[in-house]
Image 1 (cartoon, rainbow, N blue to C red):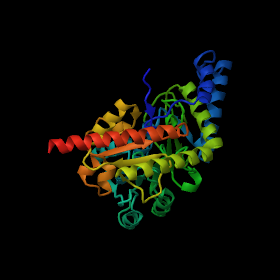
Image 2 (image 1 turned 120 degrees about the vertical axis):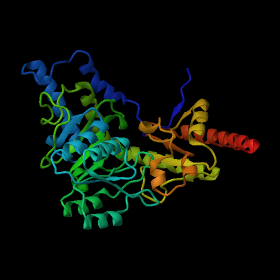
Image 3 (image 1 turned 180 degrees about the horizontal axis):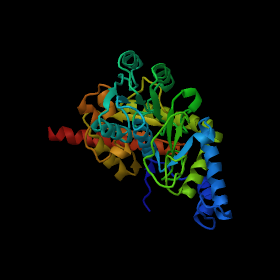
Image 4 (image 1 turned 45 degrees about the vertical axis):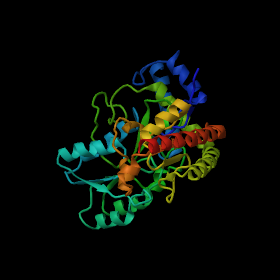
Length: 383
C-alpha cells in the first residue's frame, strides 16, 4: 500500500500507541456519565479529574483552571466571545498572523460593536513589542490575543513581554499555545497571561479534545449553555475517552519533551541546510522558532503545485495552515511580514515530530531537488 512520508505534523499528529492504550478502556468496557452519582459515574469522573491534573501539570497550572473543550478552535472562541460578553464594548487587539479561529471570532465581535485592531508583525514574523507599547500608552485594548508560536512559520512571540504591557493597562491577554505545546516550554504562570489554549491532536493525542486554561479571576460567559459542565463554562457530557487520551499525551510530553525537541532541532538543521543549498528562502529564520517547523519558498514555483507534486512522489507537506487550505490567497503571515505576494504564493511548510526519521528528510530533499528542477524547466519552456 502506498504510504507517503508524513511531514505535516503542525496540521495533526499520529496517535501515540500509549495514548491509545489509555483510551481503549473508555471506548470499550468502561462507561458512565461523569455527572451520574453511582459508581459508573464516579469512576468516569475520576478519570476526567486525573486528565485535568495531567493537562494542568504540563503547563504549570492548577487543575481548577483547566476547562476541557472540543479543541483549540472552541477554546479560542470561548475566551474571546466569553470575555467580550462580560465587558463593555471596547477595543480588541489580535496579532496579524493569528489562526482563523481567533481572527474570525474577532470579526464577529467587530460586527457586534467592538473595535478590532491588528497587531503588526516585524519582518522576522514576531509581534512588534514597540508598537504594542505605543498602543498601550494610548487607547489601550480591553482584550488581546497573540499566539505563542505561529502555526506556519513556527516563529515564537514574546508573550511574557506582552503580558507585562497588558497587565499595566488592565488588558486581558490570551495566547493560543496550540502549536507550542510539546515543542517549546509553555508555563501558564511564567507567561503571565489570563488564558491559554491547548489542543490534544498536536501532541500525538486524539482529535476532538482541547482545553482553555483560565485564570479563575477572569469572568466569561458560557458559549454552550446546558447542564453547567466545566465550571459552568462549557456544557455537554464530556468526551471521556478523548479527554483521557489528552491527559496521557500531556503526561508523555512532560517526560520526553527535552529528547523530542533535540531530535526535531537536528532534523530542522538538516532540512534547512538542504533547502538553502537548493536555493530556497526560509521564512522567519531570523527569529526564535519551533524546532520542527520550516516554512520556505522557491521563487517562481507555486506552493500548491509543489505540494501536489511532492505528494505524488510520496511526501506529505503543506502549502500553509491546514485550517486555511481551502483559501487560495497567499499566507497572511507572510504578507504581514512584508513578503511580496508573488513569493508568498510559493510558500510550503515542512513540519516534523519526534517520530520523523532522518531518511524521511533526506528523501524529501531529494524529491524537492528533482521536482523543483522539473518545474523550473517547464516554466522556462513556457516563456
